[in-house]
Image (cartoon, rainbow, N blue to C red; front, side, top):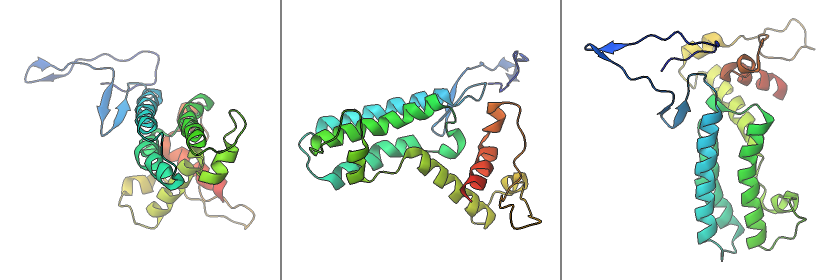
Length: 206
């Protein structure tokens, strides 16, 4: 697989023992889906599908459950864990992708509201979530990112190459509170590259 962001790829054949290597357009490595453009949407397609299938399994087997804690535990361990695996790498930045992921949690809230007999207006999951107390997935992703950066800065994660790429800001006055210099980007893709996105969101959390 060749990774590129230009309009045309430089096509070159690679050989191993005089045998040409087969070129692929998608590969699954350690649970992540990679494509030549490094677009995260194919991976999001995969995890949303897996999460919905697991949610369907829970719905089919818990229709008579009346325990709030039990339903939440099943969702968090079997469904939400799928949606949050490795989010530092593929975290969505478009409204469309965020919405697709959020719909999985909303479907669970709708099911839980019906199963637990929680009164709520149609398509309004607020009253249900007031009882179940599930954080938004986007907020959790940002929390994971800040936690990761903190661990990196304190040496709890041994990744010197990542440390080298953190552009730490030393303030000359107390009014400027940003911890990192975030480089300007010409495209949404570069603007939302994992480490740049983490530094920007860390600044926003201060």
